[in-house]
Amino acid sequence: MFFLRFVVQPKPDHARFGDIEGAYANCWMDLDSLDVAKTAALDLLHGDGWTVVSVEEEGPIERSEVKPAGLAYFDQALVDKTVLVVNMWRKRGS
Image 1 (cartoon, rainbow, N blue to C red):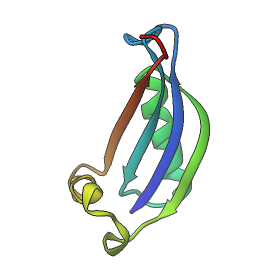
Image 2: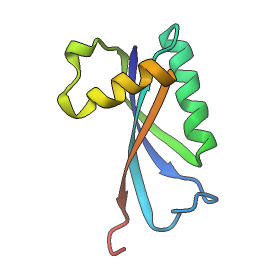
Image 3: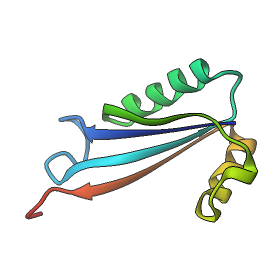
């Protein structure tokens, strides 16, 4: 299992563009390698209308290392192979 965290911003064609300043995108990827996981995560994010600003974290993760709030996502990735969780924040004044 690989965990990747990105800082992202909505593209102009994103439904929340103008309202959302940015987001943390947490990706749980049960794929063959970090390179494959990163490529898949970036494809998902771009397809969902996000521009990647930075990579905050990336690497393998064991279930024992996962905080309680992330266990359901880890377990779901074992079933679906990929789980993407986006935590957005609004623009100031929105």
